Image 1 (cartoon, rainbow, N blue to C red):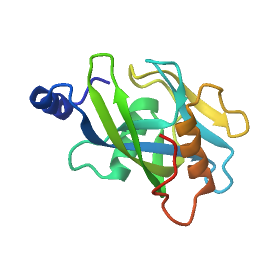
Image 2 (image 1 turned 90 degrees about the vertical axis):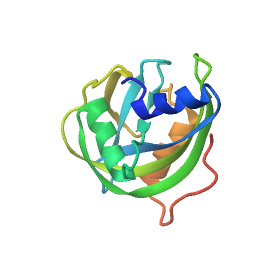
Image 3 (image 1 turned 60 degrees about the vertical axis):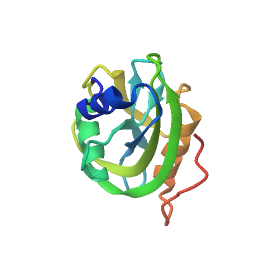
Length: 163
């Protein structure tokens, strides 16, 4: 998926200076009641496996962003259970010199229908993974997000997640 138009418009004004953007991470579980599997995508840029992530569009809700990103990236339809955490991710330094920090909204979601397929050029593979047999190439920060989604704490976690 190319860089969203609104980000390009902002970049035309600020150049590569740090940019603060709202993001979403969907921890999609199957089944939700006693999770056994999580939906992951293998990123095309660095080969790591991650939950579905994306940039929120202007005026888009967290739930709508998570549903859209999941459908675009994997073809899977989800419903949002709840917000489980909010964390800062970054700064991320891109090869073109851009710097971005993300305010990441982590949601616990349940699978409704669809089998995962690669939906865009952001990933090279996608699939369901048993929670006891996750790929080795998941970044520590994403393992913490998956754990948070599975544990489903009573309160939204606002501090303590690794960057």
